Image (cartoon, rainbow over all chains, first blue to last red):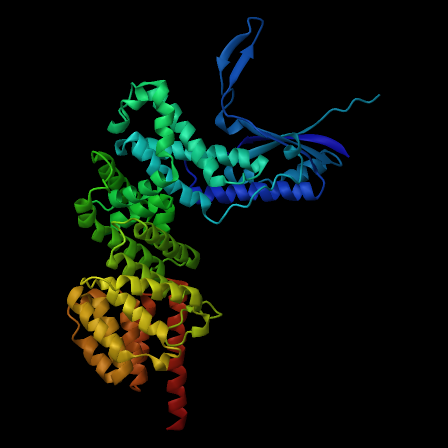
Length: 115
Length: 437
């Protein structure tokens, strides 16, 4: 088994969703996480990230306000996944409800230290 | 914190059905009180934002033990942020103006507005505000559904089988009027309360009716309209000024009708007439509740249309079998209803009751003399009633024609199935006659 990070990008549609649709969307996420967990793929569910923040950059350490990317590319959270290989991790990501809201999952293998 | 982040611990408490919807109404009502009704749009934005945060956190962390309190606390904190940030740029509710000038009083003043009892009053205040006399009844109901029940414009449009554009126009216009009123309705003024109360009762009645008889094909949506109307009626009943005989009667009629919901469709999803329903499926708990409410409504001299409709529903509920129905009592109740609130639909229902007691020819006569019956032309059950009486009178061809007109006007799959079944009955009866004669 190898470890992968899922970065959840975009997929937020804050003002357009009705309260009912929002609740259903959340329940889908929870069901998806539960399923991943039950099958032993969820090493760490991770964290949601605030959509605002600061960017500190360059030798000058210039500080600017976020967001740093287009809303559709903004990272809204991450999870740590266990899968056989990259293909498997990609396959597992396809159940994520984020796709219903035009979001994306970035799947990144975590590098291992081979001693 | 750490252990919660691991898999399998994320499920947390369960969310009730439609929790967000209900909390939405509560939160918008409370925030409009704090911000002032002219900032209605701001209140809605803040609530949406609170939901956004809740969803982001809960999907990772699980639902907290008390999700309503969590949402309210988030809304409260956001409200304090907004008041602090915009206290110079905007004007808020006048009674809060002095309090928000100082950091010392800002948070406690807002916290006070979020006390559970205050929130309950806020919902009622918003309900009365939505029933503004300058809005049509349709607009009032749409606004109640949108603001207090958290239905999006699309969801309200689906419930009323209207186009998105038309509904958006109606709701936008209604909100504009609401936001232009100086302040929310003052529910502590007993005289104003009594004057506005009938409109509020009427709006809740129409909301319930839209769920019970309405055109939406989604029975889940319709059941929810009924539930929401019952929830808001209970809120009205809980207020000392709202707990009038007419409010009890309105609640009684809702409970007694809702009791029949489980028996209204057959296995194929076709609507079943009152006469064909399996009455053992009626919800006895709701019937009991309806009876209690009806008893509570029987005080004072006022007899409202809700009393009469509840009494009709009760007469049906009291009959174990359709053939045990006390039609004489029902006809006399419809007679009284025709005096208090005459309408072609009431007249049609009265004619149906008369046909049940005195036979189909009498029913046809009564339908023939309904004033303004042209207003019923688009109503499928007007044609269905004609078809039914002709059918029982043995005139299958005419019955067939009426059922076909009804079918052409059917508004939902279950109405269509019901009418197709009646047409099939005409055809098989006709062919049976054909081979016997």
